[in-house]
Image 1 (cartoon, rainbow over the protein chains, first blue to last red):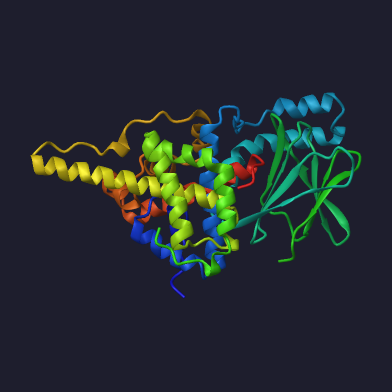
Image 2: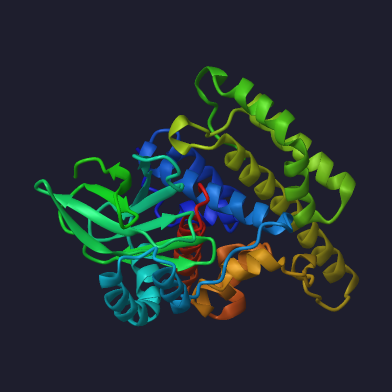
Length: 199
Length: 175
């Protein structure tokens, strides 16, 4: 088998390779599923760039954390009161942490899995996770803060509240422990769950 | 793309169907690079015809056939514009005219939504990615232009695109 393509996957998808270099990538990916998968990821990203560029009604949300959203949720009774202060503390730390979160995501291989609803009205949510198991990143299409928990040996360990960013909520967890089953809780009950494949 | 023929052309009917359904989007991809209606149409047609007649490197492990076609069309369009730039450079040199920037570097209006996505990258990643994506330059041309080692340029492009993938995934898009 020819050499693995490595970074050439992204260069190929971006159109930054010469015709000869592209031919080498083509020859390799037909016999290597791992490199074909990496190339496919890069191609889907470029396809998303093309779509982002050509559609005016799809606006990305800003990467900002409105601490006011948690406060509002507290006032509206959406968050158990005990959560408020600790969520606020984490909120301040979270902004600074975001850069680190993106850096961690870029420097590692990750997959993603969809949460499955346990209750009616559960928002669409997914868990992006490092294949090394180091970190998880939960994203839910909801304006309400939800609690992310991991199940370890039959008990639920809270990882933190999702931060509301406009119409979605998210949480990056640097060390999510060893559990492979995650749930989102709305303060009263578990509303959705995802189980990751065993490492 | 002179890719090895796929065994038995088992993906050909899927490629044809994706082409029929995504024809307009593929044309837009070619047009973004070529800025010429007729050439964009030729480019899409030639890309699909070559994939079906001469084989291709698509396999199931690669995933989305639409994304595969998008990149095939874009790469074909970039090949065309590079050849065009090269021809005009040779022509100018023969006529003794002064060297001008190749047409791929014509200023482009960066589309707002994508610009915001690019803001999630580090400044060096963003600038390098722009030269590749908007400028249509190869990694070697970018290295020559920015006086950076080829390895650095490759790493920035690779990490930059993976960072964009993280950005899209975090927004709930399937990429």
